[in-house]
Length: 60
Image 1 (tube, rainbow, N blue to C red):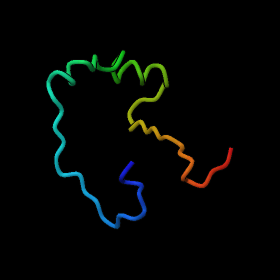
Image 2 (cartoon, one colour):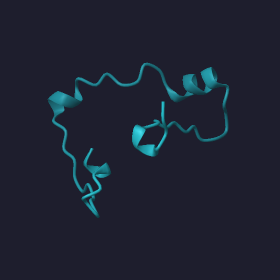
Image 3 (cartoon, one colour):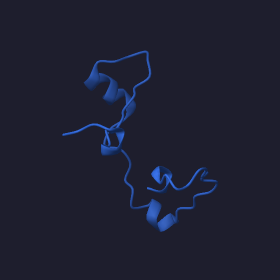
Image 4 (cartoon, rainbow, N blue to C red):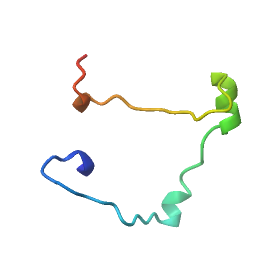
């Protein structure tokens, strides 16, 4: 993860190219946003997800 590498002071991703062959291997999500909202019973607002990473200072 180069974006978490402290030796770099500034880094910006300006371009990302993905080949058509690689993109075709992604089948997409198993269901849509409406299914997610139904499962979570959350409507009319944004949904937010996050990943807890060890570098955030949390211990097991």
